[in-house]
Length: 118
Image (tube, rainbow, N blue to C red; front, side):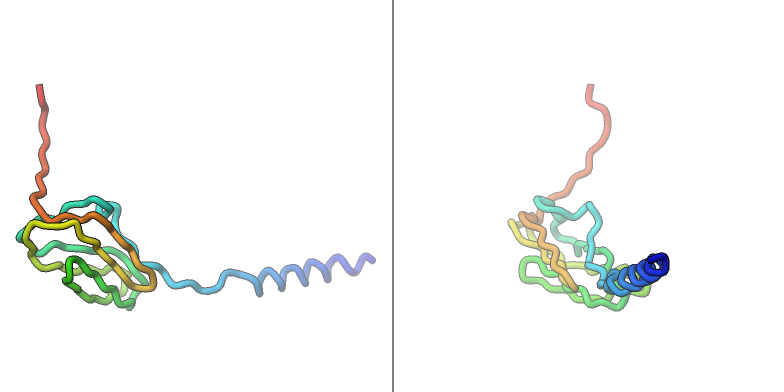
């Protein structure tokens, strides 16, 4: 009975090693600045960027315009969508191993204002 305990531990150890996590591919990701209900500036080539597994192909589609790129050695990627006229709502799709769907994207004027109101 005493000799079964080390065997049970060894067997448990082997089972844990064999049932460990399988290698998973990293998913394409976007920074938090991209999200539903966003507005992209009209009349400029709008940048879209993020991260994926190094070497992965990334496909970005908005309003019938598609751009392809490959994630670099660090996993970073970026594309520039063509300059567009005001319009929407559109759906922005970013695809690699997974698909990110950003809904209600408008093209228009983006203003950044700051200061104090008295």
